Image (cartoon, rainbow, N blue to C red; front, side, top):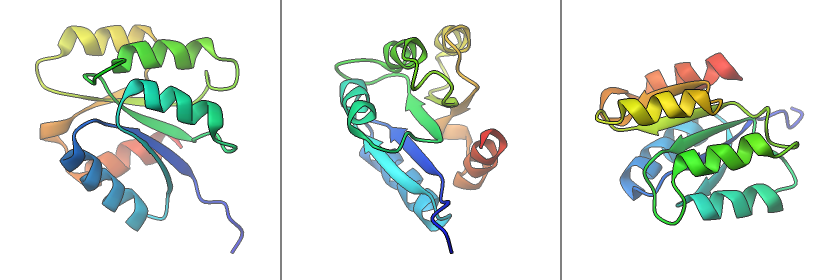
Length: 126
């Protein structure tokens, strides 16, 4: 089988949430790039030979929050068309709105979504 596996970048500082997504996405056959904060995400985007096909991006993280990362992604010619799905907590309505204004495709409220529902959203944008 040719290597037509899609690559997903997960940017999430909560190791439990990261593990859940990593396990589910690996099981679904995706290649994964992981970053634990925004600064690391930007570094990995610069270094990776293969651009991710989609980015799951947490909003609240140390060093550089998800909205700052999203802004950098949208300013970069190579990355600006990568679909981004924000990972949020329930209380972040205004941040979600700001994320949409910066070009996010969708959002997932972490506490409300099962890994299968996350897969549905991912597949929608791939």
